[in-house]
Length: 195
Image (tube, rainbow, N blue to C red; front, top):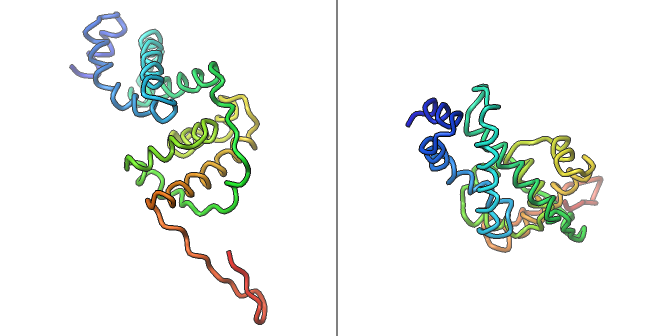
């Protein structure tokens, strides 16, 4: 079934079109939900709720961009609303994890394909994981994240910084990435500084 036929059918509440749309996009959207959820069951609940919203709001899709992107946005917002409703965003972690940050953001999209990295992200506290997912993976700005989560923009930035540092620590412990070598910089004369 083509996307156009699926859309037309969904607009007319044709069950076979809704089923086809669900089967085409649900595996990828479950992956999105899984990154935000505490368990597979939570992810499946978020997915179900997200697709209910997709089917009730399908008339708002204007063919201005990819259908998958539109669905993904609804699913992400569903996940965020679920976390806020269940107060699962309030985790906090000591500032000890904000010590040194070297994780190269350019490597994040390519390494996220590895199951170990996704599992490492899932080890982060919910607040850190949520901001990291929204910023580094979903591409939202810190301003958009602050609006979505009802937090200050500076809080979003600091949560992201801490999430990167904590993720780097986890990835180093799991030997997925290597600990960055310390560099020595000559400051003046015989004095040097390690960073």
